[in-house]
Image 1 (cartoon, rainbow, N blue to C red):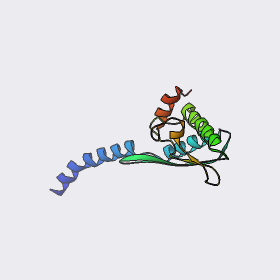
Image 2: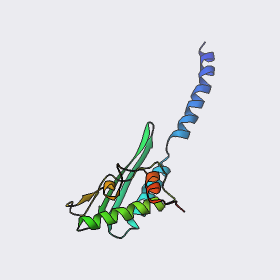
Image 3: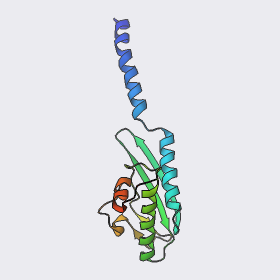
Image 4: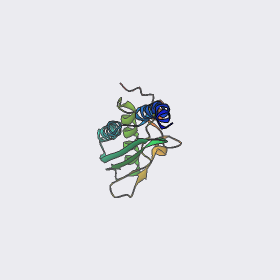
Length: 138
């Protein structure tokens, strides 16, 4: 009985392992996400620093960002965020479903802007930013 049970469950285990390996995000995908977002943000004048942490695990992934602006006025901050989102939209290395930052503070934290300040109703994904600006990455 034990031998037959093992033979019946072996294909199930093999198929399950194959499906899990195909759906799980590899560490390379997370690194690609982090590097591509940071490169896009840091290409914009007025960005003091940009760091991302990306994960894609079972049940959905997430992106956490810390983008700090050099702006000394809200107007400068809004202009910089607009430019950052345009750079993100133009990057061919970013996947459509990845989420952009929730907030963009300046260096001393006295100014905080968001995508709402440049016309978004909520925190947009990359595809929503591309659609908003009419940008197709190339």
